[in-house]
Length: 250
Image 1 (cartoon, helix red, strand yellow):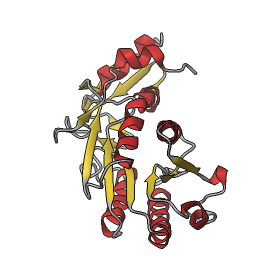
Image 2 (cartoon, rainbow, N blue to C red):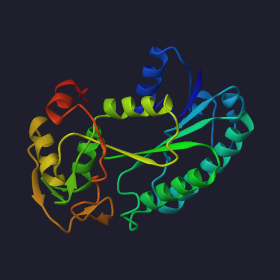
Image 3 (cartoon, rainbow, N blue to C red):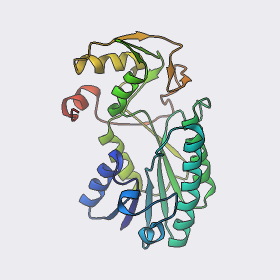
């Protein structure tokens, strides 16, 4: 079966492509670097010729509110026009747990718009909403850092390893469309500040983490349940210790 992965050269895309190829599928990793651009439409129709499944893992090059919204709206319209012309039977997209709960976040407003375009497209679909990736714990720490302290939210976090995300995405691509949302999550839940403190200690970083309920998470204040799922999520198998023991170090 031919499967096209939009954003197929990124962290999740490359892992998903590897899994699907190992199962014998014809996988096209589509990205601007491979000559496929969902914004301009360049190479899109050719890439989708004969495809039965499209996996959309593309991300905006800019997280500025207006730019990210325009990216997901234009990309979505172009992608679904090409999918309908090619007769694609399933669209799988990766979204974010909390998309509908944090309207102050411009990025999540854009993801909500992307989800609406998917629902209205007429193409059978599965939306996977994921919790934050473990690979981004360092970036979360940096976002709250001033000097030798990191002031971070006390809201809950249940991060998931990218290997688990790729497993779930590949599984969804080979399953019937749910025409709805499936939430996926890591196996361990704790306060965001505590997870980051655990990560910093593990990498030998001496920054002090300050737990602050008012600390912003990339521009938005978190409630305790903003970034976690209580909707019977599919749980990954990899906990923090196992992930950290095998994660590549930069």
